[in-house]
Image (cartoon, rainbow, N blue to C red; front, side):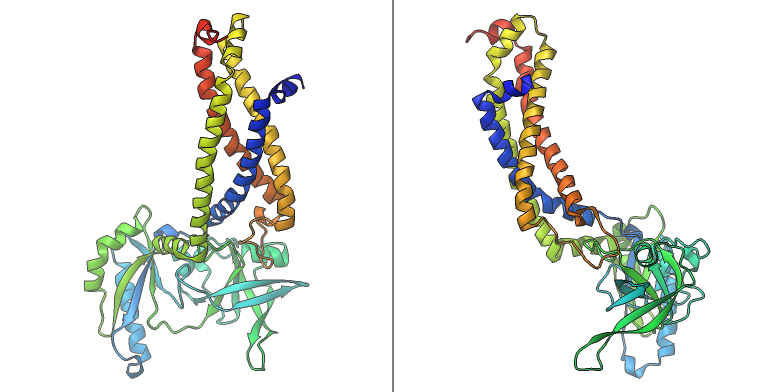
Length: 426
């Protein structure tokens, strides 16, 4: 308490505290969206995005004049050729837009015991190797990843993600159970949700996100009956093979060899590069870049502003340090005294700044661009209290680091100087 009164009894300390309060308010406003967006982008995707390459298959003829069987046979030939490329571990022909490369199908609502959740459903062909290629982990012991697409009934079998199963059933042990679904019916004047479909749950897999900026894990996989015509081939690379280097190294080989009478592979794309581009060029990516620029602006101002003030504040106490040295205080004792004072001053100021920002956050809200009332899971930033506490701690640590560094540099120089030099102005 005595040290507290001593610190805040100085006029310069009060001005420094007010500056830190303003810095806290500004940092909270600037860093909050960056922290939330950075967390979402770095959440696990649920599959091996770094090892996936898409081979875009194109038909060179008129599909209406060709027999479906012939096209399917030719695409199977291309699939076999892809599997023989050096560095490819396995491959499959996608039934629709592959995971991570574009939009997904219309959502469905699933119901169980009064609970409901909206899911985006992704189709897979029976006996395909989609789950193996993507490395999606099965959570049902009796149905390993390699067998997820086996023994499926077309348009009646569904595979849930962990979060959906926990939301509806409270457990992931749901294989063999039935699940009611509703779909949009467009027969009337206005579309309406109709509960008219039951699915048999085949298994539960780990949570999967389709895109890097997608916080949702409310996804499901439905066994579909899609004709594999002009669909991409998805390949899983062997461990240690770099996808970008693989695409570059095999580009000419693919264009030369992956050709049949009516089909050919037009180009290859690494999923990791596509995801990076989606995040970078999408709306949230542009918004995140703007937020980063704002946060960087405040970080630079924090660095120069707080550094300058603290350098001046600490140097003004050179004579005080000299007097304490003359009365027997050690260099380290004086140095840690400066550090303790800086820590106490920062803690009190940031706490006051967060309390002030709390009033603003209650009335105006905090960053919620990733909030989703229909999500099967709640992340830390969905809860106001947790969100505010986490960001406040991060803001506190950022400001504290800047203050301690700005204090330590001049304090150490002062403590190392001779007593006569420190007292010459006194």
